[in-house]
Length: 243
Image (cartoon, rainbow, N blue to C red):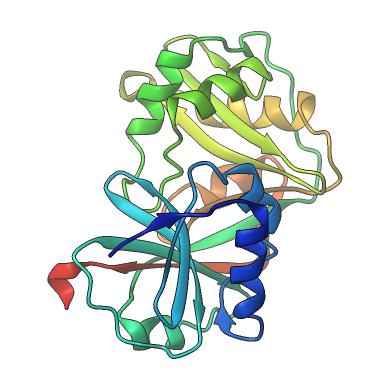
């Protein structure tokens, strides 16, 4: 698989225009593409795949015209979002379902300020925590991305115990990571972090979080005022050994 960089924004726009009307899982990604242009790569062989490489896997968005079966030596990850995600096109080219995720949206302000929680500036601690997340579906950021969020005050927590990291876009904010050290679990720290976030960090009318459908975090978020909004994400993987 020969993933190559875009020459510039014009090159990006030309590729996207060529695949207008194709089967795709592009959810208005252009703004993110422009922000990540330096690291962004694409593969165009009658079907277009655009993405970045993390943990030896390409995290891609697809634009399928010819819908050719994949025959690659590298692993791909993609997500299909909707109330009832249609995975048929992705499965037809070789992707398989890895897991389902659910989206929650803040509906009630059940927050509570915690005197123990503060903005964290320990990027190394945050990096170690993020490394513990699922290597396939987790949002594994680069060191620069982590330091950026630390500088911008988007990480709150208790030093060496746990943290909550969030992002803010023009239209919404999202919890990206909620992490508690194994030795500190079972003490209600995760809920304390989420409630503090709800009470002290909400900037947008729309606040969301994604969590695994089979995980145990749903009840925790509901205690802080989040509710399922009906949207699901199908995390799909293509692995050479499954060919």
